[in-house]
Length: 175
Image (cartoon, one colour):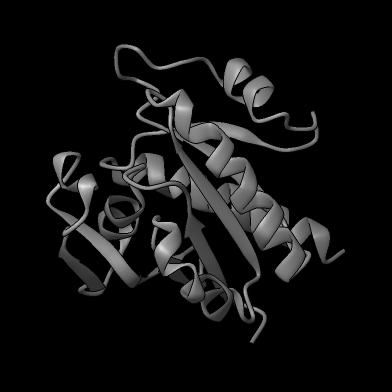
């Protein structure tokens, strides 16, 4: 049982959670994407309304990846998904600083649900207009002991590095 991990992938609306899970999953992703009917439809065509579920095996460890909805109107799913989580990843869009306060709130909410390791992942850090990891840390008022790392959610190797980092944090916390 020690080689099974439930990892929550959360973050503000449109930061790349569905792409993150889809990029690495070894199984077809269970997705609850639906057409957007609110004012957000100008940002993207679909949004997650319940979860994205994927699974991947890394170095003999099975990771169950649960992507959360990014819109607060679906927040009832957050607590359901957080049940029995071993760690969580807060994905932020490096090109969208106005979404950083929402990401900070998600850290507070998930940390209240269960004390588990987490890290902040700067998606789209390679895009023009992306802010630095240091600026993300400052704007989100993160402690120095919180890992903030870059990621390209469309790159399997980049997503893999993030997942290996969260596993390391979880395993270190168990010692």
